[in-house]
Image (cartoon, rainbow, N blue to C red):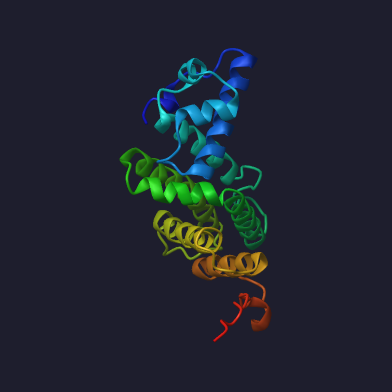
Length: 225
């Protein structure tokens, strides 16, 4: 899948629209049919484009799948949520970041499931998944370093390893709920993930009554005998 990131973007507005239509169509087909069953003819039909138009922008199915994932990654990195810097309340920023991530993960749950599946059979996708995780961890590591420099976070923690551990925790929580189907209320997820982040970094966090902090799971209907 090495070609996709290095291909020059379309030079015309029409070309940009065509490429965007192909990426949107590919996402629809991948989520509907799965990666292995998705065909290029289905993608071009969904986009109302010719096969020749497809090959103007992508070499194969692997490249357009990478483009779909890259587009989703831009959304999930939620650049509108600031890193923890300056005099902002670090717990409030962590909470906002967790909420934005979980909301984006839910919107992209089908794609995240596909990413997990394809990463087991495709080395390039596995590397793309690794880089995606590294981007999240690098951003969070910068915030942890800033908190340590301000004397707010545990100075004994390794920022990079801590960021990987805490980012992985939130990612697996999101996966268990939005991909595997565990039923946990959004606010309970946000509250618990934020408190775990704060406790790990030894940040001051407001007390929350145990009843409010506990995740509420939906009861499954009892099976009839």
